[in-house]
Image (tube, rainbow, N blue to C red; front, side, top):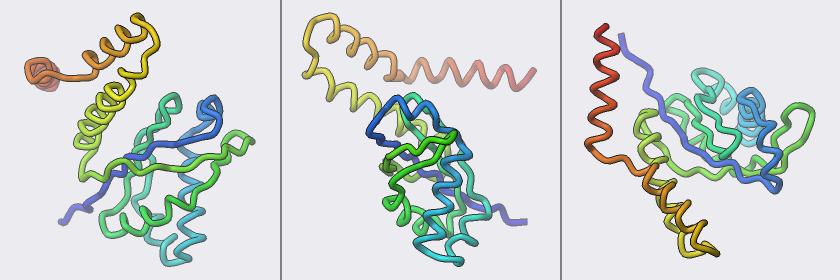
Length: 165
């Protein structure tokens, strides 16, 4: 039996009003993506993306989304994402667009990239700090998101011991 290979697309939702991002849910994002694929690529695109497509992770606070879809149609889906101009969630229309950050073969590679991406974004914020307290907070956030090899080994060992039990 052959397994179905998937791709994971790491996207960032950029909205005009960041407070409206809290209204987002995975169902609203799924409907918006499927609608735009239907509109851009027609029935063929909708049929390809209907099987195996899902929103695996959504963080409404940061606006980060992991989209999972079959490997054979990831370029089709990726090409339709720039045409999303709004997402309707809980009766409100959120004006936004999706910024594709990374395409990976597994969720784990996307998570590793997201950690590096967040650390890079924090480093970009560091020169823009207005006072010493903000600077210390950003430096602490950088240290918190940067994983050392020793720390990841300990956490992986703990996970393996939990699985053995």
